[in-house]
Length: 392
Image 1 (spheres, one colour):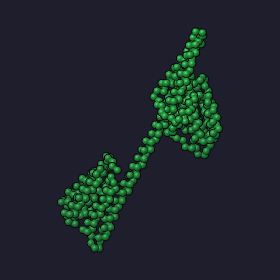
Image 2 (image 1 turned 60 degrees about the vertical axis):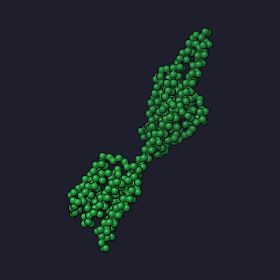
Image 3 (image 1 turned 180 degrees about the vertical axis):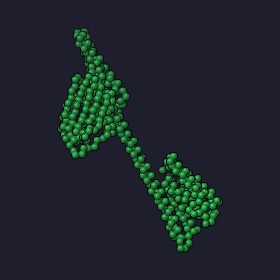
Image 4 (image 1 turned 90 degrees about the vertical axis):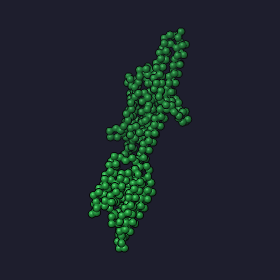
């Protein structure tokens, strides 16, 4: 694992530690004054500690060499000195920040050799084991503390990576759902436009045959052709930008045009599944085929979500309103009869809501979905109807 770039706070903390070692070198504490001839070793250790996060192994090497020179070239009466605390800090840094834990084991061996040297230099037949036990307790405690902090840091990093991976997968699945839904919308709109063109062809042929014998009938047929063409053109404009993807072969078999006349069949199917559905539909005039299809799919998805989340026995109100320039469809349920209703997905996280939102967005409308006060769920879609579409 590569070490992370140090933050400003980490740099400031390391600088503070380095200054502390310099202070121990120059001032002398713990009832012992550092000899001037050994101050350079403390300064080397203090400088090395500035790199303890980025280069822990090099830091430990520099500190170990400075400590070794202190043992080799000076008498036992001069050690340990206060700045030798840097040895423990260096070992701690290697265990916590080294790329591999093997570096921590190497640092432990180096410190162990130092313990042996100190016991030999300062111990006697009666007290050597007490001195060794004290050194082992202090150094072993520091090593274990660093190891614990390393494992926790790796665990937190793995959790963050897992969360980031799950977030990427969720976004990827959402994009796939959007692409699939747009592909389905594109195919359905293609069928709607093909239907409009077929009507135009029939009306145009009728107008051509009636042009000489019945000019009024021919004029009416041409008016229908124009209105149908405008509606088909609007549908085609919506189709631009909607990707057409692949679909399983068994799903391609159902290519019939769906109209609002099938709402009753849809409601009957929901009732047979155990829902109590109250249908309230008011249509002032026929809707364009593309909008009829969108309204039907929204109602279908809304009832399916109620059955999935609220379960059989839920009461549902399916409402359809058509004004002069828009159509509104809403699906509202009471949450079901269970003591604790099944949890619902937040708005925008389920593929069903994504599909409804895409269908409404194709027509320039809006979709509101969310929990009701108390219990239940409400979905409300508002789709504008252009004048050319009404004429069609």
